[in-house]
Image (cartoon, rainbow, N blue to C red; front, side, top):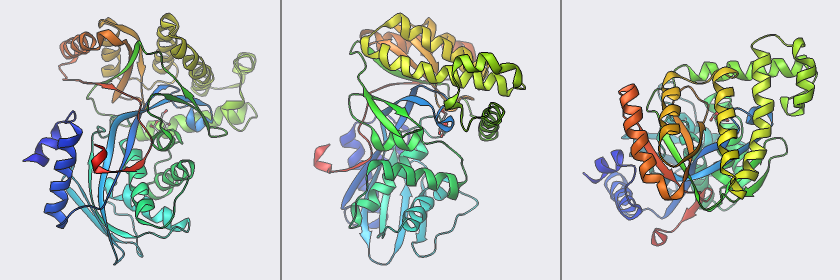
Length: 398
Ligand code: GLA
């Protein structure tokens, strides 16, 4: 019963969640877990598709996260049970292969294989997984899964690694083992988060700067609850159009292109590469600008930057679905809104709004009714906090 509740109730309190996870562990594996690890999802506040162009992203690791409750095994076997999917995977550390039928299994197998390939010695384990990051919604549920598992192996092994290295290895697992050519945004966010601040990530030198958001402004995620259909193929297409643009401009990545350079040479680019480049160059600048104005609390500037970002995502990068347009309308019409835009890769999934801290309840109510009226879909709205990056934790801390 408890696990059924946990599967559907994302807002469950952490004590009940820990009890539910421990009960599931007992039921599945007998006895108690010896190690707990968590890693957050993320929402990008500005910087859509800039990461693989080695640009800037302003990202917020969020309070929705993935937990592992684990216990070591000495026989080199890994057994994992996810409460969200009600599914189990089992594999031997000395013979890890991908399996065609299940994506989540490949994420976890990929992390184990990639850590071992990097020379790290892994212990087998039994573990129960529970996540409050909605799956396939653009909030990096896969990175949270990967980074939490890497943290489990780190906690059970006799070694440790920097959060940066952990993020890069998890990205490698996703790129090479799972075959999803994502950038570094998701894993960096999940590993380097700091409670209380957003991160301005420079995807070229992989440095991060902490960004304090003015305390009167809250980040609210609005889930369109619409499928991100075709997103994988579209994602790869956007990537190659950007690469094509960069090659024609004679640079390695679009990070090297300034707005002036693009204006002068735009005629050299075919469509749609030209539109894609225009979006990325402007989006990079917006990520840096938003970091400034969120800190100073310049609300009109926050609203303007978000509106420009959404307009570019819709008309230049073409990653907006009709559900996203309806959600944008609902967010902009809701009380307390300061700014709103797309999030993640686009094509449905979640969007993000900046909302007056005193009016988040009214904002939520407004979005729920307006979006449902317009689309007949029931959205979800999450008010989130900035969270720490992947780490082990003690049950007593909860
Ligand atoms: C997905 C990818 C990220 C990033 C975003 C778009 O979430 O995993 O690497 O490219 O899309 O910004």
